[in-house]
Image (cartoon, rainbow, N blue to C red; front, side, top):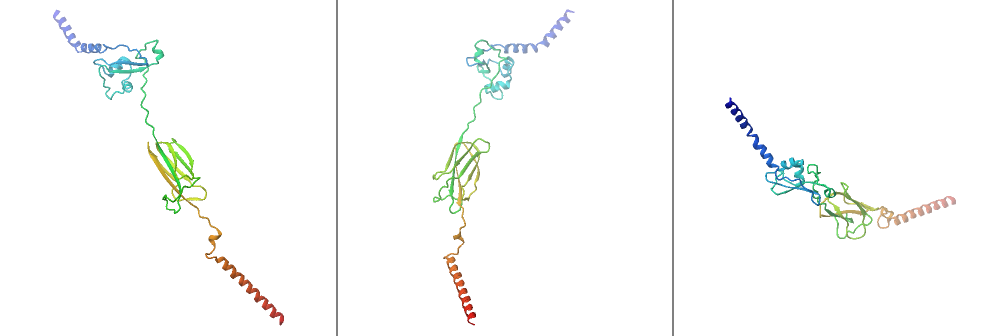
Length: 261
């Protein structure tokens, strides 16, 4: 009977052996963890101990592994180094002076991410008098004043208008945010466009873009334009007057002949 009892406890002991080491390891894993106190800036920091990983910290604090990676900018595998300081939350510094918060209840606040660089460029627009109508700016072709210019971002990031002057330099729009823009020009009264008056372009950071628009003075029809060359109207008037005079003389001659009969 005693042999059977001894055998029974021996078998139970063998069955329990695989469980005991794991329990010991779990107990050892908690060694070295101290409830952290917020620093002066309100950050709650814990220091990584031997054998810790992100899952260990999650078990201590209740903060998900994904949030730990985001707060501390860890890699995809959540790799940790012994002695590494890990941010688990941020609290108000006023509260930190009077109480030590429970890390498991602390609200984790993600660190600010770098703001994307927002750059700008420059757009310069010229409206010129296209004298020969070839849609190409020549050195002898001057700027047209009182033309209307509009620069508008397709996503609403920028919108400005301007009026051309007699200055030789183009009208420039400074600090134009990068993006896609619609450029349009309206020539003043009395001009017909010789180039496309609307244009779409992309502006990149630090880029300077120059756009030329051409227009030509509108031709107007006058009385002198319809007259034959060489003063023909005067010749036709003289001929007409001569014919009328000859007709009157013939009529007078016929009248006197009839009366004498």
